Image 1 (cartoon, one colour):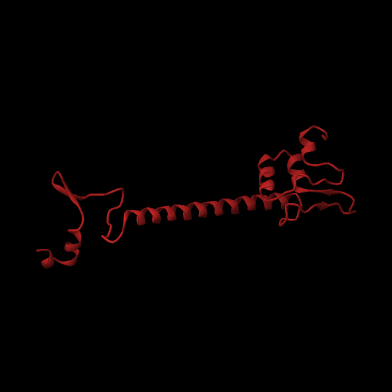
Image 2 (cartoon, rainbow, N blue to C red; image 1 turned 90 degrees about the horizontal axis):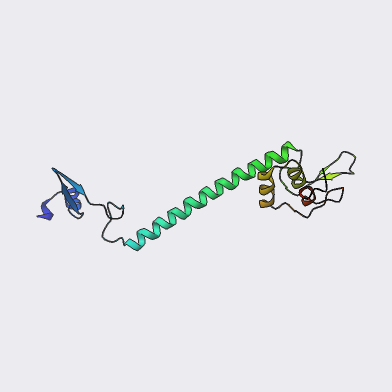
Length: 142
């Protein structure tokens, strides 16, 4: 009987069907509707895990790109080199140096402090007055 049916009908016979009321519905197993006989459950799980990992990595890369853009905007707004979180801003006469992390601490921009640290800002870097960013937290500088 199966060999006389059209190909699409023969393929449909391979799936499990269930009658509900006056209708027939395809039975889903773990959310997978149509699975060929040669595909194992382990292969499907591996594929799904791989897709989830790729999606996670894509979102992570997207978040990192957004965070880097925020960091660059902060650096540009405060006239630092937008490519280097450790590059100082030097006064026009060259005697004073200020670093991005010092500036973020001075203005109490907690998110930027976190981002600068994430992108490699040196928390032990002293600026021209010999202070590190932590000195601003400890109340030594107003």
